[in-house]
Length: 493
Image (tube, rainbow, N blue to C red; front, side):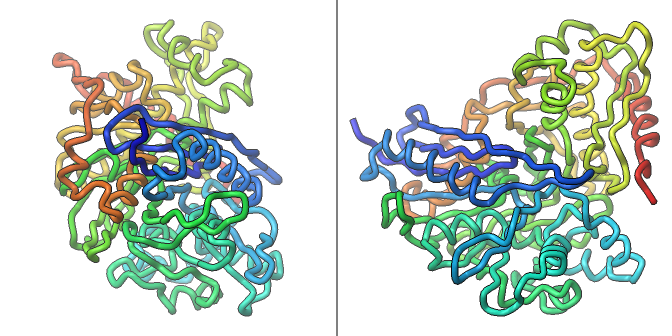
């Protein structure tokens, strides 16, 4: 029997997933393709924009073929955020590879901008910090180092803009407020590109996409090889989409995604807060009626990517799913601490020169201890962010809603609850990022009539309570902080 659905295109850091979310709650239909990671120099991470688009076409075609095009009410897009693409508007060809959010090549430039006194301006206008994580200095690098034209041929954008351009056969160059708010070029209080910041980084405003709400009809599909005329009605950066998909629709509600990195977001309502030490201020979403929600965010660069490192770099596991059982085969990490600062440290440290560190190895250390130390590092990093967030905002987090690939590990979530001293909740549908994109698009098209109808669809699979007799002081966090200090500033010139 046919049923209405909304398809989310989830263009992540390591792959693309298309996922049909049914209005009647039946199991979703999904397709996934991993794409290539390129590491041309130490600290550099790149993607092929055409390979990402090819993965979108393949996965979207497979899902539409299974659910039936007549049953697709809309498409929503969610994406790795700060990754940037430059392309030629006249030909549609990208100007080389995309620079990924993890890339650190502009660390020196960020330090120079800080030394020149520009940090306060950027903090006040954008809610961000001066770090190579964000898009602005990546755009500047592309223009300068690849000698890009700065006339009407040049298009600059994050992955959502690239996909919109391709989905419309070049007719539209759009982004939404959430992705724009991560570029270091966007005034988050007034919701517009900032001319002063664009001039500072020599980024032509004419090359940037038009900024739209996160929920609202944006365009219709018109790409060769795909069905035409399907509304694209929602866009949000992956972490904002996850906040929406986790039903964190009210101030004080928080979520964490254990993905390639970990991202903790706290809904702070409709007023743009002042810059908060150690945290980012970001636009959570804007609905079609113009209402805006803001969030505080803590960004951890490497959590799930450390599991990939155990698999691909060290060969300790052959599949990511092996990490949980291997880590659980020992009662603790045996005094081993892994600080996975492969791309520097994000919140609350913001140290682009930190590098990965292993402390506490002995002759008795085994691969199981190393695996457990990696799992525990994920929880320690989240705790560091939550501690800083609560200290800065004065708003305690009463529970933490979690998603992402690693959230399947009960060991991790129990350790996280113990570290935070609060309840950790895993929803029944852990693909919160795709779910949020689908909800934003479906809300715009009336598939779901209001936010209350979305909240009613959210359900819990498991809850993890902190051990009542444990104290935060005796869970290894002090030793973890010692290990973090040893990782900091390692690659500084």
